Amino acid sequence: MTSFHQRTFTLAVAVFLGALIAPLGGEEDEVATLKKGDSYCATEYFHEVPADWERAFRRVIGNVTGLLGFYDIDIVAWPSSDEPPVVHGKRLQGGQYVSGGKDADGRERVLMVLEIPETERKDKHPHMLSVIAHEYFHVYQRHVNPSLHPDFTIKWVIEGSAAVFESMYLKDFEENPNYATSAQLRHALPAVFGATMEKYENPEINYGTSTAMVMFACRKTGFQGMVDFWKRQPTDENWKALFEEVFEISVEQFYAEGKRASLNDLSLDDMGDLRRVRF
Image (cartoon, rainbow, N blue to C red; front, side, top):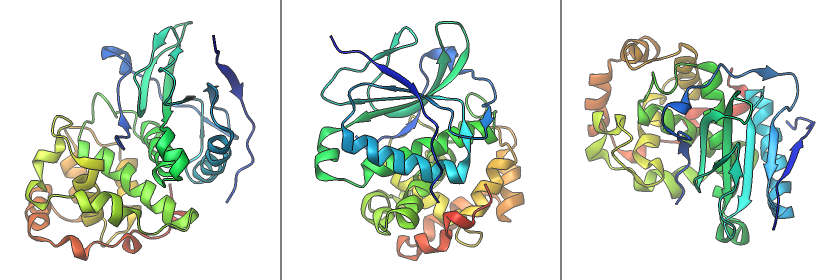
């Protein structure tokens, strides 16, 4: 029988693709405000992860923590050839996501879950790297906006922000500027650009439409605009007013203009450089 290796590392900071925020189970997705540390303080539950994946993980997590900060979370990883592990007394769902729950002592915890698809690892698919950035941005979202789940649930904002962040990460740190176009925007559907994408019940491939909506919102402000929006701590009640405050357009007008816009006008370069964003 194999077992987990629970580790807490001190890390020097270096300057189904369905990653998402997902509950561990029902009402347990109520989590306390995330504590921010001065150095890497995540507890890792790594279950026989391949050495090449762990090296890649250390590089990516070093880069994104340098941007977004350090948080007291649990990070779980295992190869897809194994069944999902049991953590804090519960068997996890497979996939890549961030969730909230309680540990064996009843403490509220945030889990960043990273199942490692064998095909992605062998093929050196860029998603193997970008999903780490995507999920860590969800951790940042929980820190900067404690209202996130259950009080803020607008899918295209939540997932589109993380999707744009992951593509920017590949561009700025991994010399891969094409992921947004090749893996995300190619799945965008302008016909559903709008309120349909506010609900998680409406699926999409690799958050293509949500990616397009965030890039369209930030075409003048760069990604800094979306970060500034998150810092205002949106909820389902106030997000439209905050959106108009930051982007100087009503949500309704934004939706109308987005339906008429061309995907060819969206450029990841317009989002700026992650190293210059004020998180």
